[in-house]
Image (tube, rainbow over all chains, first blue to last red; front, top):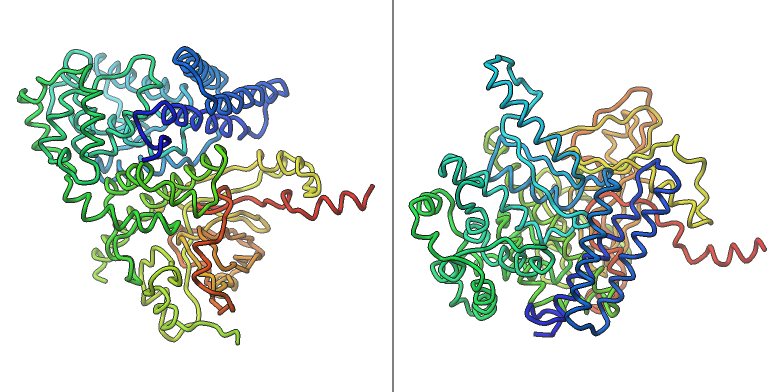
Amino acid sequence: MSETFNPFSDAYAAAHLADEARSLSSTLLLAPAQEPRRLTALRHWLSQIADALAEKCAEPADDDQIKRYKGLMIDLREFANDINATNHIVPSGMEIVLKAFQEQLHPGGIIILPPEPYLKRKAETIGWLMSGVEECGLSVPLGDAVPSSAFVLQYPLGEQDNVMNAPLQLATLYLKLTRGVLQPKSATSGGYDYSREIALRALGPAYLFAYYAQRQNWRAASPLSAIQHLLKEQGWLDHPTLGRLLERISSEVSKETRDDIVDTPEWKALCDKIPAYTPEQFDAEVPILWERLKQLLPPNELGMDEVESENPASLVSILNAGWSFYLLHMEDLYKILGSKTAQDKYDAKMVLNRLLTKGVELSQITQNWRTARKAIGQ
Amino acid sequence: MTSVLGGIEIKQRMREAFPSKLVITPILNGDQQIPDHAAAVDLRLGPQFIVAKRSHFAQIDARDADSLTPVYQSQEHFDVGMEGEIVIHPQQFLLAATLEYLRIPMDLTGSVIGRSSWGRIGLIIATATAVHPGFTGCLTLELQNLGDTPIVLHPGTRIAQIAFYRVGADPASFTSRVYRAKYVAAIGPEFSRLGNDADWKMINQLKR
């Protein structure tokens, strides 16, 4: 494994940070149709800072410098959020992927995806209004105006097409699914929030890889508990390809967490409701999807030799194929694309993200199409 | 000798191993999209669109690469979803993409045309028709309504077709070909990159 794809190396962390900076920079260049001249100049300045930061990350740096780079990245993102520079970014890869999952996991629900904070406030206000109406004993039918099952999924500014990190956002969707199993106080601040552990159980290694890559960028990392227990229970630690990697990541992450959550009745009830992603599913689907990625094809389909699409890949396997391909086979993609410079390699990573986005989108469309065909008797 | 591939041959090429494999994915209804007797594959409309907001820029001069920037910034991107729809008004121009993602082997080239059923109601589908060997991605479609009546477009409908012709090249050369990562694996409609043409350097020089 080269240093670039060794999740425990400084080079991996620096490359991850540089990729985020490049992504934020290109996001900032996608301007809205009309804006004041000074705002345009400000966006361009922020974009240049992000580019310069990405370049700087490629140079050797000590821990203090890396810490300063991370701090600058967080400040840049917050400032870009504040000037609300990106309300025109639709559709995003993240939106396509999260909506496909929502359709499968929570049909009938609706997600609001705000790259900009004001939409979140709007969604929260709708929630407050609904509670206020109820508390005042008013009877105002919701109709179509307010979705009865709306929830907000947020992703960081600049990361709208980095669907490899979608597992982190999906944890919120799993939190939604815990409602009805957990008491309201358990699902919110009053009790333990099981969403990350449930996401790990349901999404498998893809969640852990995304979590581990991303946690360096959080001001305070959210804990992921009972990780070794969860991986062991499903047999992931014995997996011939991923086992050692998962074991090392889990031992690093476990230092900061608690393990007693798996003994609670709430956890057992959640496990009954939300099935786990298993090594057997991984082995049955992911190697086929790697082959598609090596051919610059979206990993949407398991049948390589069929003309008609009859065997769409599962959405979870697509995300797992993406992360495991990145860690184990990305050099193949560099070779095909002739990627040499850091910018080339970032572009190659975005190719991988595009292929994953299309894989998820087409897999879901194929499933829906097959259901519709059955419904009309074809 | 250049010859067009028939339906049976297209299906055979889709079943071959890489690198000579032709990929068109997903084929949601094989009998409909690649009938044995036809010499083309029907392609479906994808859910993503780009519409230019004309009042936001004065003109397009591709010679000045920067002049394309405001046009790019004045576009609206839509994803209406497979359950949604979009209306194209008389004389309106918009960019769409095929639902299908294609990978063309090095010994084939493709040619995209509209389906006549749409043409007869005034919808022109594709103007840039050549798809080169080695292409990977979704095809951008340039749609224009030349009729007098607005037309509702529904993603998933069969809107265009692609015919394949043989090219005298070794299919094995696919893997050794170097692509620019920025330009491969398009997954939705893509705006013009005319400003990047190398010719502009020469044309600018001539104008000095």
